[in-house]
Image 1 (cartoon, one colour):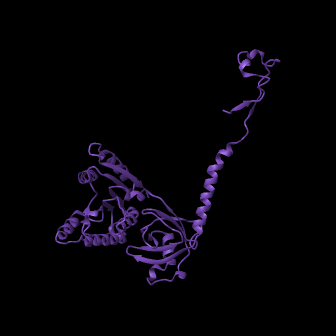
Image 2: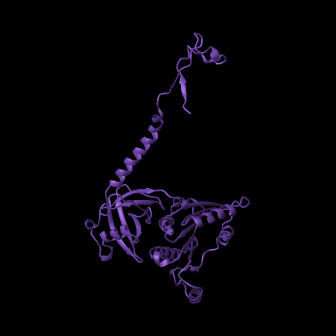
Image 3: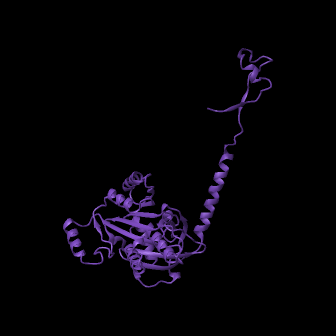
Length: 342
């Protein structure tokens, strides 16, 4: 449908001519003439296009700013850590950045979750060597050489961001439940470090307790995260604040029932878990999420509980439904679901 306007209203007054179409073309009622409106649709696009253009220019300038790799740390399981500095860079816990290395490709940008806390004097990402781009970056950073590399020997990289995620709101709840599947546990490294730093420095923290559920096929693939959990657990035990964090690690495959039974039997006499080295014992199989939510309700009645998930969509749907089902109006216990996919 094309909307047009009448241009000969004086010769053809609509109010008097509408009831007598037989007189159209006479001196009293000329034949109505119509024409299209002035094409001004582009005016409606000017503001959003201008905002988009400004945003793209700012991102381009930000991505071109000099980034200095201050340290390259080699971790087990083919993981290396880049610690970087950039003028004016600041990020909230749980955010991510995108990285480009022109020496490898001038077009490719790759996203990585920040694993450093805002209190650190650097920002860092952990990169697992699983493809051509990450392998080439590891070579340029001399990861396999092991020795400390001076900054001028390291490649030039561009960093854009940081960009927000749901994990930014972890500290805003009474209780937070972090659920990570495999590599989906990465966003929570920065969150846990930031939470512990604020608590140790007597900064205002609304969050009272953190439940971490890590569901993975093989914890050895993310031993760097195990190391972080071990450090946090050790510091909390030294301060007598072990009630702040509970960790539940679930191994879903890579073992059979006999192996699991033998590990559990030998593990009962040990203070530390045989798989993760944590005081919290590893469980074998997938978690019974309904039982988990019942326990959360019993432990934190009347609390506002934030559930943060990073993993596959199938489990996301299950957790979302459970959050809705276990939110209670009677005792004011409320679950708020937050997710991000990879």
